[in-house]
Amino acid sequence: MADFESPRGMRDFYPEDMKLRNRIFDAWRAAAVASGFEPYDACVVESLELLQRKAGEEIVNQIYAFEDKSGRKLALRPEMTPTLARMVVARQGALPFPIKWFTIAQCFRYERMTRGRKREHYQLNLDIVGEDAVSAEAEVIYTAVAALRRMGVPDAAYRVRVSNRALLSELLLSLGIGAEHHPGVFVALDKKGKIPREEIEKLMREAGLDDRACAAAFDLLDIGSLEDAAKIAGPGSPAVARLHALFEALEDFGVREQAVFDIAVVRGLSYYTGIVFEAFDTAGELRAIFGGGRYDGLLSAIGGKPASAVGLGFGDVVVGELLQSLGLAAETHLDGVAIGYMTDDERRHATRLAAALRAEGRDVSLSLHPLKAKAFFSTAAANAAEAVYIGPDDRAAGVAKIKNLATREQREVALP
Ligand code: HAM
Image (cartoon, rainbow, N blue to C red; front, side, top):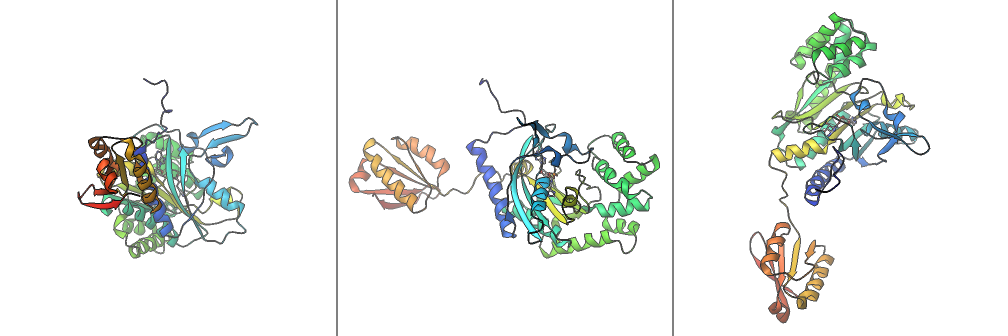
């Protein structure tokens, strides 16, 4: 046994793990760029004060915090959104709003480890700042779906559950529960199914609700359809109208089928103000694949001018598990060339051929020492599309054969 292991919940990525991670990252990046999002980045170390907001949010208790040698209170970010907000506020006067930005951010949360939850994960973040229209929600949801499609995930394998905190607010107001209690109620209701009902009720009482209001707030989560919610909200509900507009935009994007209304999606972060959504596998085995929503108050809360914002976080851990469970995790696309040689006399020919093919843009794995043919083919075949094995006869003829490892077809190549 080695003396050291990676710290609990932190991940080592061996080359075989990097293949899957890179495929996920490539799909994320390609989908984000195809939808016109621009990349940005920031350091994983953030000021603790920016990350600590209202108490009661689980994420605040999960922060890895430390002091630097000058006594600054710092932390490893648990999410990217406060950093994004800080960066936008710093240039709020100069940026051409609306802006569409994306990043792949490493995040740290001291979580209880369960399936799909690690203490370190990567998150695609897609955010649009400065757009009130529901077209912003549609764009981020569509782009996350497009990334899943690029990974080969079938549309039927997941559903994006959509709700609107503004709708819950309208319904809470109709029950006589004042707006000042709503943020606390949202964070409490998000815990439904995760912690016992008594604990949720305790949280709601802390948010200022009496027993009758607690029970009524709970019952709201049982509303089964948008039509039923609309009936309770009454005609002209702006929150219902926004949801209808979002579903219509998703239809135009060709992803309507994946989206469903679910009033019980509230989200655990307190900064969301409007539409919220979370994607889950249809098999119901995994945690959320991605989640996000509208957060129109965050920029002003950290000292900026008021600005509307919408975004989502899409983690690598859960989608990795989804790909595994769908049998989509294995690498199927190989395009490199492996070059091997029998004796030291063929080394220089092999090296020159490798250099020539690399100069043409091919990925070439060149053996570092002579190998028997059997040993070469058993390792080369695992990672390459084509293989060239150079023996004394090839050297004498000045020609070798490139073998397609899938079709067994061969073609000749002059040895440089
Ligand atoms: P979140 O729901 O906390 O939202 O995280 C987003 C996604 O990150 C989750 O759906 C999950 O895929 C992944 N994730 C979160 N925690 C872990 C963990 N411990 N282990 C593995 N995966 C995890 C946010 O973070 C918001 N800041 C998203 C956002 C961006 N909202 C607006 N813009």
